[in-house]
Length: 118
Image (cartoon, rainbow, N blue to C red):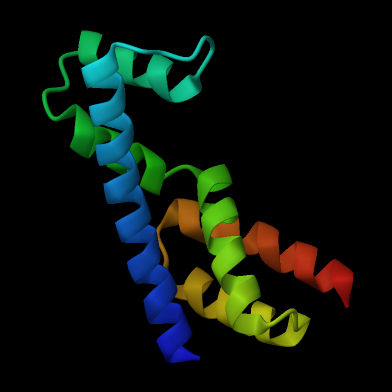
């Protein structure tokens, strides 16, 4: 179980870091923005507010986005739990106990969902 938790925590860091890098590079090189894309809007607002390390800032924002965490952590938890509600809840409770605020909230939300499946 600890291995699964550690791998999920590592995955969150990699996902947010590489995701921010790819997203930032893509938008910077192409000057392409999706209309209404919340990340583009947030990035532009941060730029206007004087944020210098936009890529690092974007990674932090992704790391603190509850919805994003639910998506990426939920997939990994399902894989490790192999569909077992008991295993999923155990993994999520360990993640919740040592996580930052957004991760705790995401895990709490997912625990409720898994409990409803029992």
